[in-house]
Image (tube, rainbow, N blue to C red; front, top):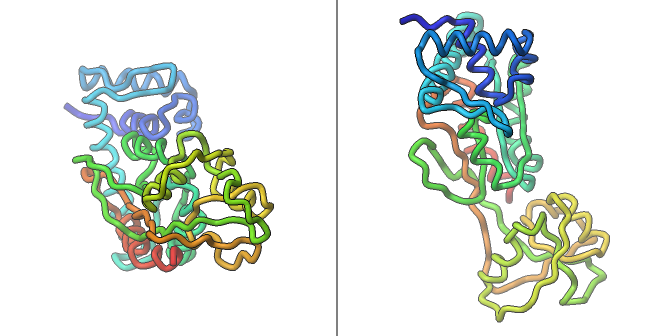
Length: 285
């Protein structure tokens, strides 16, 4: 059995985008032409690979296996072409897709990788800021090469390592002395405030909350005296309008890097892991 390379590339793009319209645009063909290539690939392999649904495209078990194969094939192709063009120790090239949560993407991940990206114009970067509960699925579906979370998860398909630590603090506007001022969180599912005070082992009390969607909106709200919050200490460095309310027990979250255990890592991917390991904690201090 032979896998047609044109059909496999179309399938690979569809798996990454999980949407026929976007995938067709990315490989510059019509949506009907893409559908034809996927249908013919399924006929070649004699099994169903993708399932269309209201939320986009999902993969069958066979589709997942073929997607892993396609990712490894194209990653190896990327590495081989780069080594031919630039030599084994030449400049890095290829695509890099990272999904992370708001308190570290802009403040720690981006500057940690900036030296690497500046060295080569042939690195295509896509950063995705997402809510914590949306991020793991992006690695599962292949939308991201790497994800970062503030907690550990057990998954045999993922490889993980801690690359840093966020230290949480209780903050309030310098001019505000109201202990019962409303707390600012991302949304109703954000447990940061509750978890922080649970770690202080304080007597439970009712906490009023408002929702400001992302970490920078929360910090701006505190600066303007609109509420108090629990945030990572590194985000408020040099902000004179904000004071830290000290508590007995320090609270921290790990910064965990995850990537697919079954995927071939290109030179670029290996360099990303190394740069995050070496640099990210310095931006979280």
